Length: 426
Ligand code: GLV
Ligand code: MN
Ligand code: MN
View (spheres, rainbow, N blue to C red):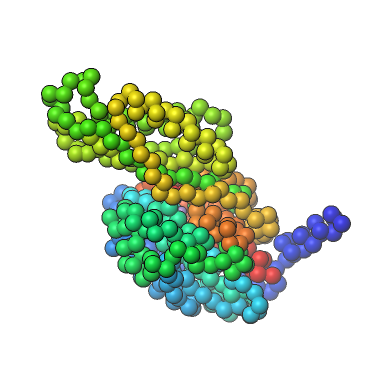
């Protein structure tokens, strides 16, 4: 029985593809699309500053919609402001397969994160249109909005967004609510998920690795086994603002001193355990922010990640323990407000074999690896099976203007995306 099942599995995912098996995407066109997209929010260092809901994000979305129309996709904006391009399938009884990524960037980020998967998905659709191939499943190409601010668009799709989260201020200075209105969504209709379990046949995302394994080991394609969970917090430390010249050193309630101890404690908490858990303080602002005032308030952040939710909880516990001590030492108060949380997500076994077989058909080497970066795919994992394809990042650098992936690696990744889609469609 076991052998029959294995054989069927082999047939499903490894059988040679029919006539369309020779089709390849247009790599040159894909890399030109990426280069053109990089103009929106281009920085002098050659990176991208295109935070969600900014003017550059809005202009990049217009550009992307034009490309989707050129790919003969039927484009609409959903209630969350995600851009969706549809292509009909031949079997009306089948649910859509979704492919895509995001085009927003972190502040002063790179030109590949999210953008490779977005332009790659559009190029795949354009290739299907050009070659006159109709899939059995409908195809949806999706450009998720605000991935970098905590996978907002994909969370709206899979889980819905609580009204209080809509009031958080984003890097564009707009709240999420204002941002969603600016991109054509309706923030008042997002408490319930936009899609239900079973609405989609699957979701596939092409992305850069953002780590150095593929680059170091000279491997062409990463087959992602899972995506870490993450827990994001806004941390406010309240002390007492007072004169820097007249307040004796032993009578201060210095919020910035407490913050310094907190940054150290966060680092220590993650390092004190075995495993790959990480914890980061990436943002800090002192108030009132003057040379001659002891800071009375600090607003800072926390990002904790691991593939195991129990590990995340353990790191958070250790941080809370240290914070109690810091409060006592400095006469300050810490307040933690959660701004985003994603569960770790495992990719689907069938999708992993389909990606691996598709890469091997193209003569490409593969490697199974986890993702330490967050992705929209992990939200979509609540709705349907997911798969992720990674291409190498030079020196493993990401969220930086120095992020770089070679054009040939990007072309390979999009070809694997196309072949995997064709395989899964069968
Ligand atoms: C998203 O890119 C994240 O991992 O923070
Ligand atoms: Mn990113
Ligand atoms: Mn990304």
